[in-house]
Length: 321
Ligand SMILES: Nc1ncnc2c1ncn2[C@@H]1O[C@H](COP(=O)(O)OP(=O)(O)OP(=O)(O)O)[C@@H](O)[C@H]1O
Image: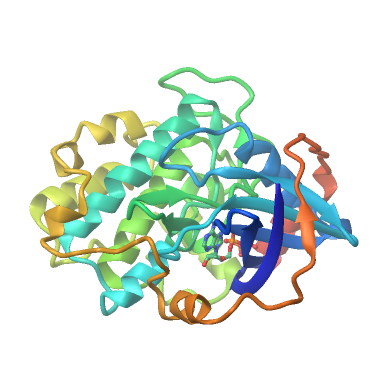
């Protein structure tokens, strides 16, 4: 597959994401790139993404290495991130929309967990809104396979990764980071959808965040305006003891999400997700793809190389801020 790089549509801590056009079909894809020498996390993401196949996980499109740059190609999500979607709706989503997206996030997570993978960095910025208007889990750079698993157990793993304010108490204490930690982060994402902020908006530095989450015994405040059913659902996600937290499979059977109709018609509004819908994306749509534009050839071969020292460094960086 050949593609031409267009404008930048997103920047994360480890990579830059560009819109790109496939040659000659003209199809749009997203390409996440970073310097080859710093691409361990991106290669790790490539390895995981290439093994996944679910409508609730962003689709893999191959990788390439050009001029010392590592490129990961994937499905372009014209709706941007769930964080963007919250901003588009004035800083909070109504309960109908929260249910809609929560149901899809849980389906994606259930798929990952059934395949033995913990995402480790669920938050609204890592959930993308696809062409179909559905939420898709993205950014698998922190993900990891658990060493062994069955339906009911949590797992101790040796590496810790993620964003401090979305970490579960057991992760903040560096005890374990298993499937249940992703469920806690779903709770945090519901709070983001309901309030427009992370669950601990008053905590600015990672060290105090980890200390408070891990050792204070506090649980984030439940948004008051949510229905009783939504609050009860949130409490199942945010049990302090990971063994008592509900699994993705169990939560999908909870009345809060079990009846969700997967159609935008449930919002009584027309949604056109075939073109970019954030302000940022609209600008891209209006511009011609710029001619920094060398053509790239993508291989779908798997070239995963793992460097634990870098991963540990990233975790240390998180701890020390
Ligand atoms: N497939 C995509 N389609 C559209 N936009 C995307 C896509 N992938 C990423 N983006 C945009 O780019 C941003 C950064 O991407 P991503 O979170 O994957 O980078 P990162 O470097 O891994 O970030 P982090 O800081 O979480 O480590 C996203 O928040 C989103 O706005």
